[in-house]
Length: 318
Image 1 (cartoon, one colour):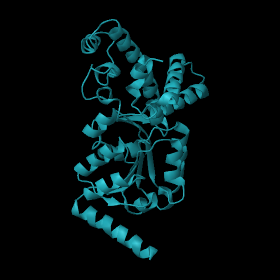
Image 2 (cartoon, one colour; image 1 turned 90 degrees about the vertical axis):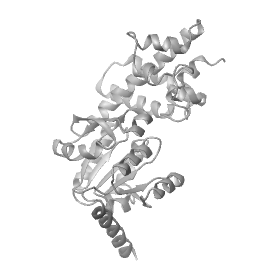
Image 3 (tube, helix red, strand yellow; image 1 turned 30 degrees about the horizontal axis):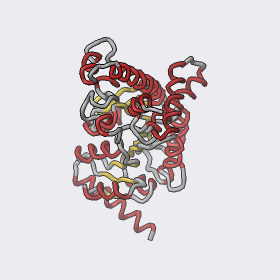
Image 4 (cartoon, helix red, strand yellow; image 1 turned 135 degrees about the horizontal axis):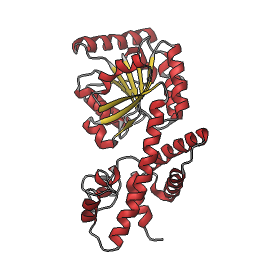
Protein backbone atom coordinates (compact mmCIF):
# COMPACT_ATOMS: atom_id res chain seq x y z
CA UNK A 1 0.00 0.00 0.00
CA UNK A 2 2.82 2.39 0.89
CA UNK A 3 4.53 1.59 -2.42
CA UNK A 4 1.31 2.25 -4.34
CA UNK A 5 0.88 5.57 -2.58
CA UNK A 6 4.43 6.56 -3.46
CA UNK A 7 3.89 5.63 -7.11
CA UNK A 8 0.69 7.71 -7.22
CA UNK A 9 2.46 10.72 -5.77
CA UNK A 10 5.30 10.44 -8.29
CA UNK A 11 2.76 9.99 -11.12
CA UNK A 12 0.99 13.16 -10.00
CA UNK A 13 4.22 15.13 -10.02
CA UNK A 14 5.21 13.79 -13.43
CA UNK A 15 1.79 14.55 -14.92
CA UNK A 16 1.72 18.09 -13.56
CA UNK A 17 5.29 18.72 -14.69
CA UNK A 18 4.51 17.52 -18.19
CA UNK A 19 1.31 19.56 -18.40
CA UNK A 20 3.08 22.83 -17.57
CA UNK A 21 6.09 22.52 -19.81
CA UNK A 22 9.32 23.37 -18.04
CA UNK A 23 7.76 24.58 -14.79
CA UNK A 24 9.19 22.90 -11.70
CA UNK A 25 6.94 21.04 -9.28
CA UNK A 26 7.37 23.07 -6.10
CA UNK A 27 6.64 22.03 -2.53
CA UNK A 28 5.68 24.76 -0.06
CA UNK A 29 5.63 24.25 3.70
CA UNK A 30 4.38 27.02 5.99
CA UNK A 31 1.34 28.92 4.72
CA UNK A 32 1.09 31.69 7.30
CA UNK A 33 0.67 35.43 6.70
CA UNK A 34 3.78 35.57 4.53
CA UNK A 35 3.99 32.04 3.16
CA UNK A 36 0.45 31.90 1.82
CA UNK A 37 1.00 34.94 -0.40
CA UNK A 38 4.36 33.64 -1.57
CA UNK A 39 2.85 30.29 -2.46
CA UNK A 40 -0.02 31.93 -4.35
CA UNK A 41 2.49 33.83 -6.46
CA UNK A 42 4.11 30.53 -7.41
CA UNK A 43 0.68 29.24 -8.48
CA UNK A 44 0.14 32.41 -10.53
CA UNK A 45 3.49 31.79 -12.22
CA UNK A 46 2.25 28.37 -13.33
CA UNK A 47 4.15 26.12 -10.95
CA UNK A 48 2.39 22.92 -9.86
CA UNK A 49 2.33 23.18 -6.07
CA UNK A 50 2.30 20.60 -3.29
CA UNK A 51 1.60 22.19 0.10
CA UNK A 52 1.73 21.33 3.79
CA UNK A 53 0.71 23.29 6.87
CA UNK A 54 -0.89 22.72 10.26
CA UNK A 55 -3.81 25.01 9.37
CA UNK A 56 -6.54 22.94 7.68
CA UNK A 57 -8.48 25.99 6.53
CA UNK A 58 -5.61 27.40 4.51
CA UNK A 59 -4.91 23.95 3.06
CA UNK A 60 -8.50 23.83 1.82
CA UNK A 61 -7.99 27.20 0.15
CA UNK A 62 -4.94 25.92 -1.72
CA UNK A 63 -6.69 22.70 -2.67
CA UNK A 64 -9.38 24.87 -4.27
CA UNK A 65 -6.64 26.49 -6.35
CA UNK A 66 -5.70 23.06 -7.72
CA UNK A 67 -2.74 22.41 -5.43
CA UNK A 68 -2.00 18.98 -4.01
CA UNK A 69 -2.11 18.75 -0.22
CA UNK A 70 0.54 16.56 1.43
CA UNK A 71 0.19 15.05 4.89
CA UNK A 72 3.88 15.39 5.75
CA UNK A 73 7.02 17.17 4.54
CA UNK A 74 8.38 13.77 3.56
CA UNK A 75 5.51 13.26 1.13
CA UNK A 76 6.35 16.55 -0.55
CA UNK A 77 10.03 15.65 -0.81
CA UNK A 78 9.18 12.46 -2.70
CA UNK A 79 7.73 14.45 -5.62
CA UNK A 80 8.96 18.03 -5.67
CA UNK A 81 11.81 19.41 -7.76
CA UNK A 82 12.15 22.31 -5.34
CA UNK A 83 10.83 22.97 -1.82
CA UNK A 84 10.31 26.32 -0.10
CA UNK A 85 9.83 26.49 3.66
CA UNK A 86 8.52 29.52 5.56
CA UNK A 87 8.41 28.67 9.26
CA UNK A 88 8.27 30.58 12.57
CA UNK A 89 11.54 29.64 14.28
CA UNK A 90 14.72 27.54 14.26
CA UNK A 91 13.10 24.59 16.06
CA UNK A 92 10.38 24.34 13.40
CA UNK A 93 12.96 24.39 10.60
CA UNK A 94 15.03 21.67 12.24
CA UNK A 95 11.95 19.50 12.73
CA UNK A 96 10.57 19.96 9.21
CA UNK A 97 13.92 19.14 7.60
CA UNK A 98 15.51 16.54 9.87
CA UNK A 99 12.68 15.18 12.04
CA UNK A 100 10.48 12.12 11.63
CA UNK A 101 8.67 12.42 8.27
CA UNK A 102 10.89 15.40 7.52
CA UNK A 103 12.08 16.57 4.13
CA UNK A 104 15.48 14.91 4.35
CA UNK A 105 13.98 11.50 5.06
CA UNK A 106 12.81 11.18 1.44
CA UNK A 107 14.43 14.04 -0.48
CA UNK A 108 15.62 13.27 -4.00
CA UNK A 109 19.18 14.01 -5.08
CA UNK A 110 19.70 17.53 -6.49
CA UNK A 111 16.38 18.84 -5.13
CA UNK A 112 16.47 22.58 -4.41
CA UNK A 113 15.70 23.34 -0.75
CA UNK A 114 15.03 27.00 0.04
CA UNK A 115 14.35 28.06 3.61
CA UNK A 116 12.81 31.54 3.72
CA UNK A 117 12.34 31.47 7.50
CA UNK A 118 14.22 33.83 9.80
CA UNK A 119 16.35 31.64 12.07
CA UNK A 120 19.78 31.67 13.68
CA UNK A 121 22.73 31.29 11.27
CA UNK A 122 24.02 28.19 13.09
CA UNK A 123 20.78 26.29 12.39
CA UNK A 124 20.92 27.31 8.73
CA UNK A 125 24.47 25.95 8.46
CA UNK A 126 23.50 22.72 10.23
CA UNK A 127 20.52 22.05 7.95
CA UNK A 128 22.65 22.87 4.90
CA UNK A 129 25.21 20.27 5.96
CA UNK A 130 22.49 17.65 6.53
CA UNK A 131 20.99 18.40 3.11
CA UNK A 132 24.39 18.06 1.44
CA UNK A 133 24.75 14.57 2.90
CA UNK A 134 21.54 13.64 1.04
CA UNK A 135 22.76 15.20 -2.21
CA UNK A 136 20.23 18.05 -2.03
CA UNK A 137 21.00 21.74 -2.64
CA UNK A 138 20.13 24.04 0.29
CA UNK A 139 19.92 27.83 0.59
CA UNK A 140 18.90 30.02 3.50
CA UNK A 141 16.86 32.83 1.93
CA UNK A 142 15.03 34.94 4.53
CA UNK A 143 12.89 37.78 3.21
CA UNK A 144 12.10 41.41 3.85
CA UNK A 145 9.19 43.47 2.60
CA UNK A 146 6.36 42.48 4.91
CA UNK A 147 2.98 40.94 4.10
CA UNK A 148 2.37 43.58 1.45
CA UNK A 149 5.59 42.65 -0.31
CA UNK A 150 4.72 38.97 -0.09
CA UNK A 151 1.31 39.62 -1.65
CA UNK A 152 2.66 41.83 -4.44
CA UNK A 153 5.66 39.60 -5.16
CA UNK A 154 8.14 42.38 -4.40
CA UNK A 155 10.07 40.80 -1.52
CA UNK A 156 13.80 41.06 -1.00
CA UNK A 157 15.51 37.67 -0.62
CA UNK A 158 18.81 37.55 1.28
CA UNK A 159 20.42 34.31 0.14
CA UNK A 160 23.12 32.30 1.84
CA UNK A 161 24.29 29.56 -0.52
CA UNK A 162 27.07 28.37 -2.78
CA UNK A 163 27.35 30.42 -5.98
CA UNK A 164 26.15 27.56 -8.17
CA UNK A 165 23.08 27.03 -5.99
CA UNK A 166 22.27 30.74 -6.06
CA UNK A 167 22.32 30.69 -9.85
CA UNK A 168 19.83 27.82 -9.85
CA UNK A 169 17.30 29.32 -7.44
CA UNK A 170 17.16 32.88 -8.77
CA UNK A 171 14.46 32.19 -11.36
CA UNK A 172 12.20 30.52 -8.80
CA UNK A 173 12.65 33.30 -6.24
CA UNK A 174 11.88 35.90 -8.93
CA UNK A 175 8.27 34.69 -8.87
CA UNK A 176 8.02 35.90 -5.26
CA UNK A 177 10.43 38.84 -5.06
CA UNK A 178 12.10 41.58 -7.07
CA UNK A 179 15.41 41.95 -5.21
CA UNK A 180 17.38 38.72 -4.87
CA UNK A 181 20.78 39.18 -3.25
CA UNK A 182 23.56 36.62 -2.83
CA UNK A 183 25.01 37.38 0.63
CA UNK A 184 27.67 34.67 0.64
CA UNK A 185 27.90 31.09 1.96
CA UNK A 186 25.32 29.29 4.10
CA UNK A 187 24.19 31.34 7.07
CA UNK A 188 24.97 34.76 5.65
CA UNK A 189 21.40 35.27 4.45
CA UNK A 190 20.32 34.92 8.06
CA UNK A 191 23.00 37.34 9.24
CA UNK A 192 21.74 39.98 6.79
CA UNK A 193 18.15 39.41 7.88
CA UNK A 194 18.72 39.72 11.62
CA UNK A 195 20.75 42.91 11.05
CA UNK A 196 17.89 44.34 8.99
CA UNK A 197 15.25 43.38 11.53
CA UNK A 198 17.21 44.75 14.46
CA UNK A 199 17.26 48.08 12.66
CA UNK A 200 13.56 47.74 11.83
CA UNK A 201 12.63 47.03 15.44
CA UNK A 202 14.61 50.07 16.60
CA UNK A 203 13.15 52.35 13.92
CA UNK A 204 9.56 51.30 14.62
CA UNK A 205 9.94 52.27 18.28
CA UNK A 206 11.58 55.55 17.24
CA UNK A 207 8.79 56.42 14.81
CA UNK A 208 6.18 55.47 17.42
CA UNK A 209 7.78 57.80 19.97
CA UNK A 210 8.07 60.59 17.40
CA UNK A 211 4.47 60.35 16.21
CA UNK A 212 3.20 60.19 19.80
CA UNK A 213 5.20 63.28 20.72
CA UNK A 214 3.79 65.24 17.79
CA UNK A 215 0.18 64.15 18.23
CA UNK A 216 0.20 64.86 21.96
CA UNK A 217 1.49 68.33 21.22
CA UNK A 218 -1.25 69.17 18.75
CA UNK A 219 -0.03 67.92 15.37
CA UNK A 220 -2.35 66.20 12.93
CA UNK A 221 -0.88 62.68 12.42
CA UNK A 222 -1.23 62.68 8.64
CA UNK A 223 0.38 66.10 8.33
CA UNK A 224 3.21 65.18 10.70
CA UNK A 225 3.87 61.97 8.77
CA UNK A 226 3.97 63.87 5.47
CA UNK A 227 6.52 66.31 6.90
CA UNK A 228 8.73 63.54 8.26
CA UNK A 229 8.49 61.65 4.98
CA UNK A 230 9.88 64.60 3.02
CA UNK A 231 12.54 65.34 5.61
CA UNK A 232 15.67 63.76 7.04
CA UNK A 233 13.77 61.55 9.51
CA UNK A 234 12.15 59.54 6.74
CA UNK A 235 12.37 55.74 6.96
CA UNK A 236 10.34 52.65 6.03
CA UNK A 237 8.58 52.67 9.40
CA UNK A 238 7.39 56.22 8.73
CA UNK A 239 6.64 56.31 5.00
CA UNK A 240 5.42 52.77 4.30
CA UNK A 241 4.24 51.26 7.61
CA UNK A 242 3.45 54.21 9.86
CA UNK A 243 2.40 53.00 13.34
CA UNK A 244 0.16 55.97 14.22
CA UNK A 245 -3.59 55.56 13.56
CA UNK A 246 -4.80 58.24 11.17
CA UNK A 247 -1.42 58.78 9.53
CA UNK A 248 -1.75 56.26 6.70
CA UNK A 249 -4.36 53.97 5.15
CA UNK A 250 -3.92 50.28 4.40
CA UNK A 251 -1.47 49.52 7.21
CA UNK A 252 -2.04 47.56 10.45
CA UNK A 253 -2.37 50.82 12.45
CA UNK A 254 -5.49 51.61 10.40
CA UNK A 255 -7.17 48.33 11.38
CA UNK A 256 -6.39 47.84 15.04
CA UNK A 257 -2.92 46.37 14.44
CA UNK A 258 -4.32 43.12 13.03
CA UNK A 259 -2.49 41.12 10.37
CA UNK A 260 1.05 41.94 9.37
CA UNK A 261 4.16 40.91 11.29
CA UNK A 262 3.48 39.97 14.89
CA UNK A 263 5.28 41.57 17.82
CA UNK A 264 6.22 38.10 19.07
CA UNK A 265 8.03 37.45 15.77
CA UNK A 266 9.87 40.75 16.02
CA UNK A 267 10.89 39.81 19.55
CA UNK A 268 12.16 36.49 18.24
CA UNK A 269 14.23 38.23 15.57
CA UNK A 270 15.64 40.73 18.06
CA UNK A 271 16.61 37.78 20.26
CA UNK A 272 18.49 36.25 17.33
CA UNK A 273 20.29 39.56 16.81
CA UNK A 274 21.20 39.78 20.49
CA UNK A 275 22.58 36.23 20.41
CA UNK A 276 24.67 37.09 17.34
CA UNK A 277 25.87 40.28 19.00
CA UNK A 278 26.94 38.42 22.12
CA UNK A 279 28.71 35.75 20.08
CA UNK A 280 30.64 38.32 18.04
CA UNK A 281 31.19 40.73 20.95
CA UNK A 282 29.36 43.53 19.13
CA UNK A 283 27.96 46.47 21.12
CA UNK A 284 24.28 46.98 20.31
CA UNK A 285 22.80 49.23 23.01
CA UNK A 286 19.78 50.37 20.97
CA UNK A 287 19.14 46.82 19.79
CA UNK A 288 19.21 45.66 23.40
CA UNK A 289 16.76 48.38 24.47
CA UNK A 290 14.43 47.55 21.58
CA UNK A 291 14.54 43.90 22.62
CA UNK A 292 13.51 44.88 26.16
CA UNK A 293 10.65 47.08 24.90
CA UNK A 294 9.24 44.25 22.78
CA UNK A 295 9.63 41.80 25.66
CA UNK A 296 7.59 44.08 27.91
CA UNK A 297 4.98 44.74 25.23
CA UNK A 298 4.52 41.04 24.52
CA UNK A 299 4.08 40.37 28.24
CA UNK A 300 1.35 43.03 28.27
CA UNK A 301 -0.78 41.39 25.59
CA UNK A 302 0.79 42.69 22.39
CA UNK A 303 2.40 39.43 21.21
CA UNK A 304 -0.22 38.70 18.54
CA UNK A 305 -0.62 42.29 17.39
CA UNK A 306 1.44 43.71 14.54
CA UNK A 307 4.84 44.99 15.61
CA UNK A 308 3.78 48.55 14.79
CA UNK A 309 1.48 48.32 17.83
CA UNK A 310 4.43 49.73 19.77
CA UNK A 311 2.72 53.09 19.19
CA UNK A 312 -0.32 51.90 21.14
CA UNK A 313 1.85 50.25 23.78
CA UNK A 314 3.86 53.42 24.35
CA UNK A 315 0.81 55.68 24.46
CA UNK A 316 -1.68 53.60 26.43
CA UNK A 317 -2.68 54.92 29.83
CA UNK A 318 -1.80 52.90 32.91
